[in-house]
Length: 359
Ligand code: T4K
Image 1 (cartoon, rainbow, N blue to C red):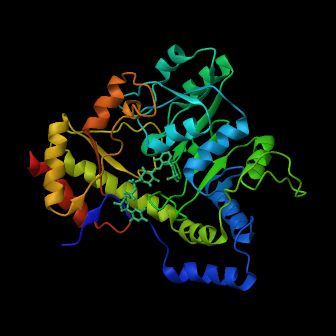
Image 2: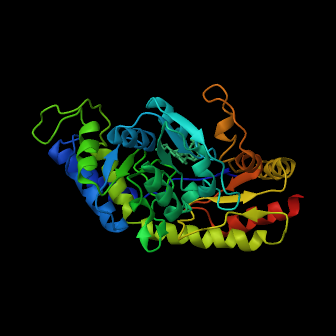
Image 3: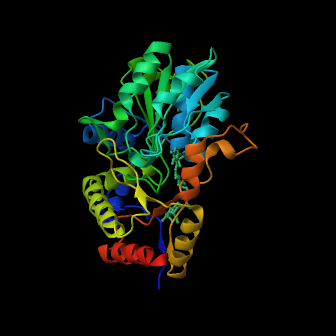
């Protein structure tokens, strides 16, 4: 039996991608803010109802570029329950991550604890919309305003999520997102920064392109993080299927929930807005239960993933350890089940039943 992995990229029919590639072959323009990158940025913004996006090579650099564009150095308050990229981007830019524990129900940073972590070195807050679930935007913005802090959202999972009728990616000074192969919308590798501030927009555009301004004069120290035409073509092809892909995830998400309600010792993420349902995390009572179920799934060629394990504050080689009880406990007990466009509903039911019978 073929293995079922935690995810698979959502891909447009190959012919639709190659049609777009023909235009690249015809023009010979492969990169440098070419027509397909511009179209991808435009069409993506239209889909998401955003003012603009600056695409870059990946989601990790999108976070780094956001820090650079805001010209901040110091402590950045962030979530210990995330992918390593959230913390490493902060460290890579010479800043210090300061963890604030999560709300164990939403899995997002707990705004009530943020104020206790603010010092005279704090420059920004970097919350993560974990699994596409919106953070408490109002509470975070109120704290940021009170203490004059910048807000960078790690919205790597947030494409297609909504909060109070707006795109989740529209909040914060800058939102950084990812178009990695495993994400809701993919360009193979890719990412983007969203901001409605024109000055920041210009700076982000210069940062990805050697620091050049519109007149090809070097205005700031930049680097090279431009998205290529080949990646943008893939994004454009896949964008057509984004709405359908999100609806499909939501159906399968609800199906999993229905089947797994057979047990009262499992719990789920509390959604606090219109989540894109890009992941299906399930929380066990103990790590032992998780390992038992994981073994059963692996025996059946089903490969779930422990996103996110371990809690980032425990990576002692890169950050000083400080206890984060909720994040550490969740990280030990959470498993993401397979969820993707090509996964059949019968496989969702089969996976759910294996779990129900595992204990
Ligand atoms: N912030 C957050 C909160 C993030 O979660 C991430 C990335 C970032 C920032 C940074 O964004 P990027 O710089 O990556 O754009 C994956 C992804 O590499 C990573 O993008 C993602 N988050 C993270 C949560 O998951 P792995 O180590 O799980 O990847 P991998 O290769 O094991 O893939 C998982 C499964 O996906 C495989 O079992 C098979 C399938 N797969 C994967 C790839 C790469 C495919 O079917 N095709 C593929 O091409 O990290």
